[in-house]
Image (cartoon, rainbow, N blue to C red; front, top):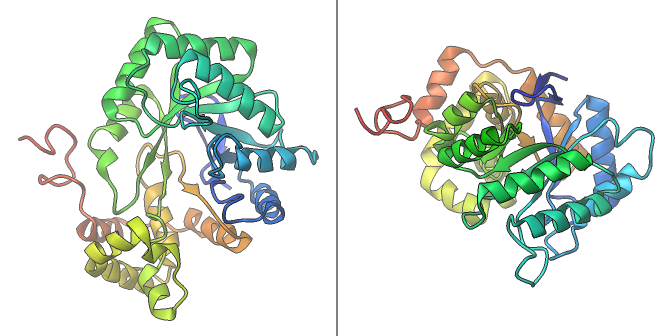
Length: 330
């Protein structure tokens, strides 16, 4: 396993992140235990979850599964860099959602209880709260840090200027601030290259891409469709994107075949090649899917292949791969 520091922090994390969103809704609890044990066997130490995962309001189903796995002992908690999130609704009352100091206090206590731990390594804001001032957020977070309940803080789904707001407010308080940003990022969705990636690099934040295969669309969706083995990659948002980008994805799968690599491996490897990326989140439903994801760490993409991928899935700007503001100006 390869390891790197999470942003400018001294925290060492694996370059693949185990996503747990399927634990409960898609993957049984015993199978979830097996996947987490296998992740440790592979040296994956960075696990990502959220208080809303499991999609039963207020229950924190996925956190509970992880907590019962920790309770089995044998160093499971100690070996894990545990990341969870708050923001989403955990109840029907006004202060059960968002980033008020009150909800931060309640949310962290709920996650600690469900996760069967006394501290969280990385506590992430799941989304921007435009109605709560940064002074309130950082004050609440600083209390958690002083209490030893949280060690590091991160964001998710922030724009570049939100990262700047957060970091400048933290700097004014002489506080470490954010160490990471979790964004959707893959060959089909490259918007963060305009502002978020540059901002993250400037402030020393590690970037943790979610949906690195765009809901399975970059994992051989056309081949699976042809073989009758496709599932979520041909449904919902991914299905709509497949209709729009079919020619590019067909060419992509041919390129992967020419490389002798599985499309999912190439898609993950491409994300790993991007400057500023700590590691993509892989969300396996089975042990086999987890095992296969490790091939991406071994696949090195040369400049010619990276250029071909840029041709198939261009950067999100009319002026090519230039940074903002040149990307949309002159």
